[in-house]
Length: 500
Ligand code: GLY
Ligand code: MN
Ligand code: MN
Image 1 (cartoon, rainbow, N blue to C red):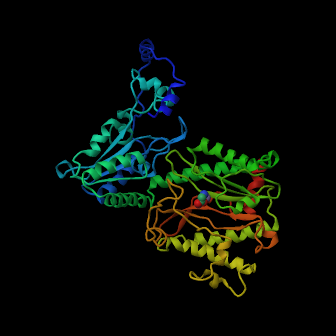
Image 2: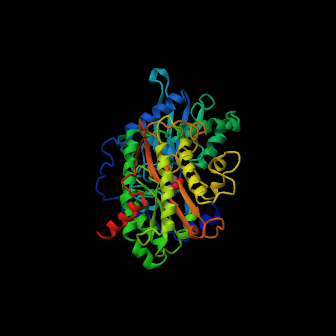
Image 3: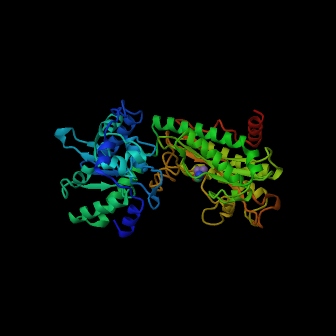
């Protein structure tokens, strides 16, 4: 502890007497078991671990959940486990800070493959100081944690106290190859790097080996199993509820002022109520703010006559998140210019979705959508003199259309809103779509208020439409199809909700 931390720890300390210790430890009802059955996610997580085991035979694989992150001095952010840890354990929500999953290689006599061992900080006894005194982990401060037995029952793997991790990680050092997910827990990475380099490994070689593991775990999520698809359907249904609540409150958001904040709050309320929370900071962008792609400040007003671009998703308890955008007229009706842009984006989205089928490449979805965007821009006379649709789509020259849609049309979606981020270009953009993949289709058009190349009637209007689609055997299933998309359906949707 630094002297600074020492001072902070002491300045609010209360006296702890032996009498108090004895008194606080006694007369509690017996504990109830925290888990009585295997979780729904556990068999799927076991199947994923089996695939990891096959890919890295004989090696020790370390997947930390990560630790608590300080928000300010002694206050932490709500914990979210590393996505690879969540995927391989089936744990969601805020579980389990400081835990580490180890896949320990087993010799052939003991069945080969790997044994999954979860090291974590289990519930401390009521006779411990931690019970009442530890503001970060203690039961009095942050609630009861599971026991070793609870975790074994829930996850169907071996669980051990985190205190045993260091020895387990160092066992047979130098003989067994150890790979680690490096970005989950920086302190742990430093410790293991020090231990591994002492055993003679080169730092650069270690990093390369670790990166291979991280990449494998990221691409393991490229296709979703049936349980994951179910979780995604729940996330989308919950997001639908959030959007309808926002629509119901649009007049309130206009009337109160600071309407973007109101929209963010209403969606956040339902995200928290329906699921674990928002899967990413909601983009609540009214008027010209919609032309800023990641407008998460949400500090503006919502005015009668504005569009509001709401890009938001509920993350369910398993941490799978939806990622949906609807662009809504605050007063319930699109103006002519707003509708003109909206219908162009809708046409682009339809073209993008039509390209979602096995055998097509991931990049074909963007190619189909952006062609429609280019066609509209050409028709509106916005491309430079003498440049036609093919001219702007040319990869080496042109690309003028990108002034009004600079982002890609799709990304993989799952536990991370931008899932499978470590996949290579060959595995991602240039890869064929396969059944079980879930991706967004989200074209947009954004005309900034100060864009002198845009027609005046278009300035200050941004539109995006974003849906989450599952690749099926012969095409796609739009998971968010229940949320209206065409301009007339959106108006009818708003009217229906306002007249309830
Ligand atoms: N919400 C960020 C995105 O649509 O990718
Ligand atoms: Mn989005
Ligand atoms: Mn998206």
